[in-house]
Length: 314
Image (tube, rainbow, N blue to C red):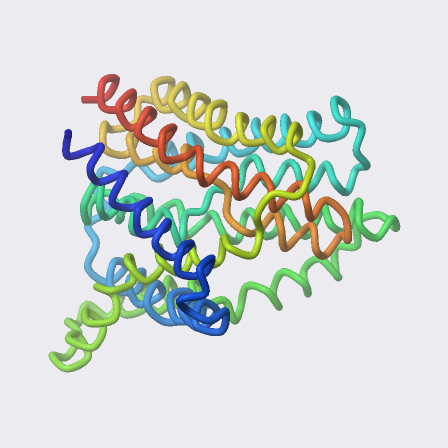
């Protein structure tokens, strides 16, 4: 077994263990929720904070990296919306859910430990450049579309701005990014005790996040909408990394940045599409099915795209 294949299997095995722990009742639902809260609220923000403080971003070509990733997001979001509304005849609100489901990669709970395992700290530093823009950009796009299709009264800029600030200011990931950048600007090293505390919690972020993600999948399952969920899964796991690969070649990304961008695009969807579906009151089954199917299929497709990216970029 190649090291790459073993790493992919290890990452998804941790997700599977979390799923089994929830499915069998070995751990109570409250334990899974607590693990998720700890991972998202404490461990992962500290991992991001540590990365922002000590990372060497030189040579990461952020503008080309962002263009590579977010052009793939825009293309696949549009395709997901059109497939949902035109091909499957769903309403515009469900189209928003379809667009998010096919383009919103799980860059935090799955992506952070995945990049650390496959590409090491340098790869995670490059992912952090995407993460720093990903959450605000995707959140703003989701809020605008929610205003447009969810309320039926057009776009209200003041309400959008208030909603965006409300969601972004208290977000633990954003706090971790900003705190890390502010500390970096001071040029000071972290005090010994603080560094040990940060390291202790940041080092367990990956395994805890993967286990918590698997545990969370237990609540979704499959409940109809299989055909549209499969179509959106194909867009997410096949089209999006293909577009990212093409853009990386077109823009001449450095090899490691290109491989991280393709791998990030190849990750399965996060829970955001389901949360948006809950807000709209439509497409919940579509979002939950797509999330479950995409995560299961990603065991194979992510290994495939990593192999392709390795062959193309070296």
